[in-house]
Length: 91
Image (cartoon, rainbow, N blue to C red; front, top):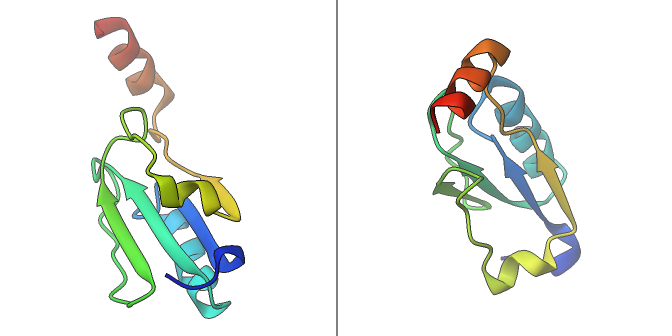
């Protein structure tokens, strides 16, 4: 991992918007940790400064190194509001 100030976390980083953000952050010299459950997004960038964690952000347990993240971009979301409400009502 690079210096602390160049480390960011992107939830939902395998989606369309998230993957473009990850590309941009990598271009800017950041180490990027992506947390995504892969329900929707499948975009993955093969780069040594990106780490993918397949996990639902609601269940993710932060590790010690996550505390050093300079920023967290939270893009994890269901693209369909009605589907989200159905999931919530079932649980």
